[in-house]
Length: 399
Image 1 (cartoon, helix red, strand yellow):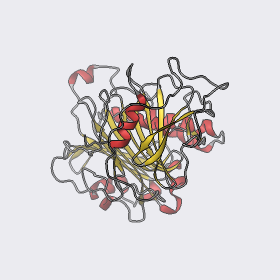
Image 2 (cartoon, one colour):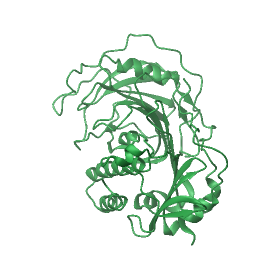
Image 3 (cartoon, one colour):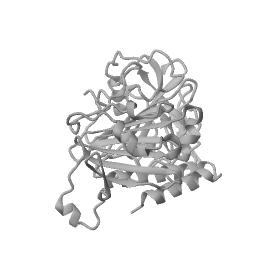
Image 4 (cartoon, helix red, strand yellow):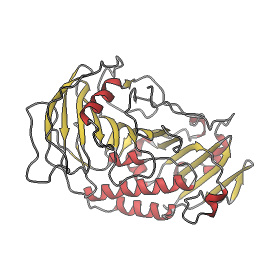
């Protein structure tokens, strides 16, 4: 089991190195594994596999114009994949919601997109907005239940800021993907669209791209998890049913902003909503000084607040030596059992996890430089806790 301190050490070493694209891939792997380990130990059962979607990119437009092109030479399509053919099925009507102009900035406090329709078999939906692995953006993904597979499988939407072209995925092998196969798709939400496929995916996979507004690109990715799944049909149905907005606020189970130092601003939001009983909801917000946002977050010099439903650990789980349990409390705060680490990984960082605070588990992970002398305990004491919140859901789907 990877401990917090070891994950932080590995991530810091990767950030400080100068290996280029492979370094970025390793950071994402460390984040995916480390975050998941921590969440399981806190008893959340939260699937954060969608983080794999933001692994490094190499810009390859291959967007709309031109006829079909087929990848040759460098890499092959996954076994069973056939060349893309023009879509001839029925296209459902588009939801009338719109984003009127390409996003010049991404505000983490806005819920830009929700799924209006999803196919069966998926376990959870995750929403990310703000600072992603390579610049700002919006990422909404639905993935399989249970442990994260080596290759992400599910459905995702990505909204790119103004003037940023969609980019090729970076496979787990670390090899850059430089060749595409592309065919025109039916119009999506009134815009010209294309289907794009990249070599190297172990399952049937397709990307659907269109402009949600002039110079603002949207992309649906479908990576098959079931034999016989028509990935083109799924991509079109998901795209047409999306609920888009620039005015809807991100929901949270409790007000968080009053507890945050006034000089910090939200830079990234993560929400997870279960589609099956085996998963749980999750909300995480990163805050940093606006003047040093990206560098501060990557160095860990920021504040992160995480919220999830408290869960009582069963006796059989405690008896299982392989179970990933939350760390045992080592202190109390305001009468609540808590786990506190004054030096959690990176020098100058501290970690506080408070259990069963009005039905919530609350995690606060911060660098001393962004806190007052009361530290993470002071942040917790400023949170406005009232009433049972464990049944809250973020509302990432409407279907």
